[in-house]
Length: 65
Image (tube, rainbow, N blue to C red; front, side, top):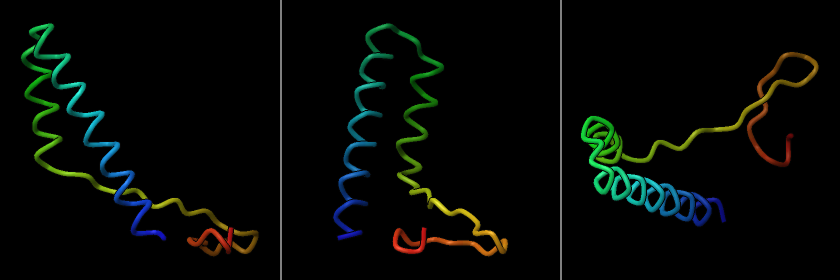
């Protein structure tokens, strides 16, 4: 289940970046075009959502939160 969500999130992220790059190319904003291309080459880096409980301990799973 989690793998599927990560894959979907990655595909969505990549598609958004490609659309941004295409838009920048059409508007001829070269500096931002190269920056976005570099981000795309670097790849998708998923972020974890963590929070602390009342005792200050980190919680990571959906069922814990």
